[in-house]
Length: 160
Ligand code: NI
Image (cartoon, rainbow, N blue to C red; front, side, top):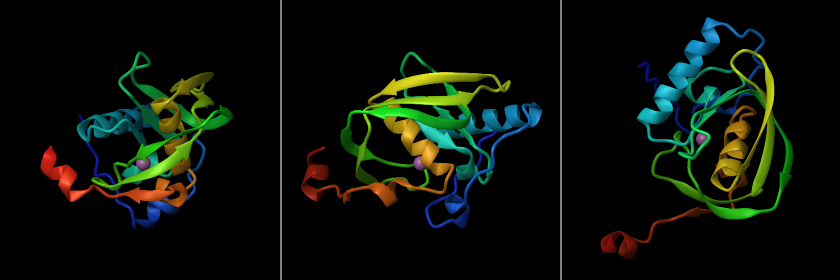
């Protein structure tokens, strides 16, 4: 286990553009391991490398479906269709959610941990995670694209 500190909104590193991965070596695999450990420890469904201070185009996602852990190196969205609107959060800002419109079905082209290209299609939460995490690689955060912040009503809290 190597759980890393997750950088929070306001940290300038989260606003930088990440560099493509060119070497598929042990260093990359250790990064992937650290990212998965950190994501699972934080009980998140996705994490991008800049969130642990590494400016590389690397993403891990696990939305607890049949795909299991998904590793994306140098990912690109190659098609998107439909629309979904709903709450979205980020491990870099615990406790906050925004109302964000995203495509409902997204296909991503990426490289695996050995540098081999593949494509993966996700719908619903997985499509949302693809968009959110790939945005991170270009320094873009969901607060940039949200319609509004979702503010928990105090009475709702009291009912729980
Ligand atoms: Ni995020």
